Picture 1 (cartoon, rainbow, N blue to C red):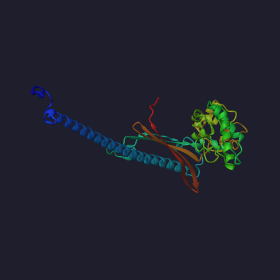
Picture 2: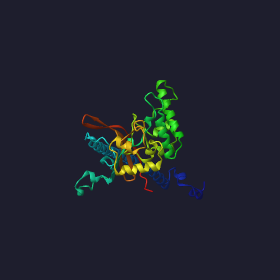
Picture 3: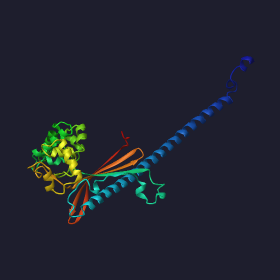
Picture 4: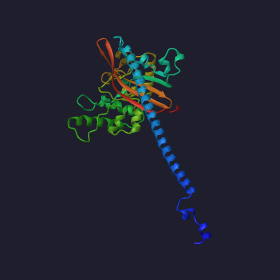
Length: 336
């Protein structure tokens, strides 16, 4: 090979070694790969740490919220016990302390008397409400003790459906479903529906979701048959309970009741149509069962606890027993 041609060959061809520029390129590529791996591992570690912090924060917030809502429930139980402490106080109406809702208030107002010491308090707002569960129609009333339908109570539910604008077929389906459940308890089968414990569980009987949503403010499922408290019932329930009344007559009854509640079944009887049997219709002026709603708002997140309680009395000592609780967590919806 001529000398002129040798000069034009790469250096490796001449001396068998890689030129310095190629070595530098390989080293740079290796360094970039190492940096990429380190950055990936570091990002993964940071993400895992961030996720652990978020999970811990959420768990702490959940535990704190549970304690706060438990305190709200204890507050409601105390009010109901104080209301029943007097043996003469056998009437429940909307003018009593338990019926006054707790308006939404900053949590710090409950935690410290000295407002200068509330800087570190959580940015949370608490509200609460006690409602009379016996102001609603009790689905359990639809069956007699022997498991057969109570035609009078079925008619009440049918009128309630009509007053709230839904098909009376819903009442028929509920009665049919409860009868099937009662019969299935004696001869169980795979097709026997489960016994509903809440209004939402009426869907197990084939009731549409929109009908359940409409009936929820006026219907309750209790473990025993109970009368309707006419001192607290809304006009829709009043119109359904008193055969022959429409919503206008029920509204006049509610307005009269607002001026002075009925302090006895005798006074209630006098306000109803002549010869109306309040015992057969299962009407009263007092209550044992109540619903307690506690609502905690943390930023855009809302945690609500709904508790069903029963007020009992052993001698002169009243007590309030929690039958079941339900917690609902959702994003706070702006007022429309």
